[in-house]
Length: 167
Image 1 (cartoon, one colour):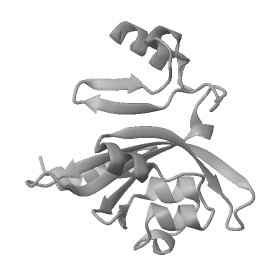
Image 2 (cartoon, helix red, strand yellow):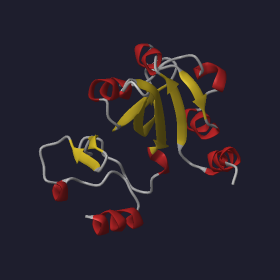
Image 3 (cartoon, helix red, strand yellow):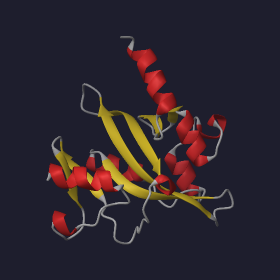
């Protein structure tokens, strides 16, 4: 099986936006779904960093900060604003994962973006947990509650059942 062809096929079928950033945080790859979710052109983003978007009031936070600080996969909710920085366009569930070189330095970041409007339940970012990967085995919540008390983040009934079964 040709992995490049398989990935290209997956990339066209997925409803998840995927971005790859270099060690400096510059966008070096953006899939079509990301462009559709963000309603931007590839040319508008390539060469920029998430910090450029944050500093120009196009997003409410830069998830890359947490990844750089903790050197771990991080998931959070990000608000995207219009070009004037005043109107909320959408919210994304963002997962950003670092990839390390042989010296243990972050070489690339891979970001996964899911438009929260595509979920089939209401999302409340005041009660949703923020997660940080503590090791290769899983996530721990960053709020002061037991896992059973933490509300699910806007997922389908099937996903809730799968998560309950996994516990």
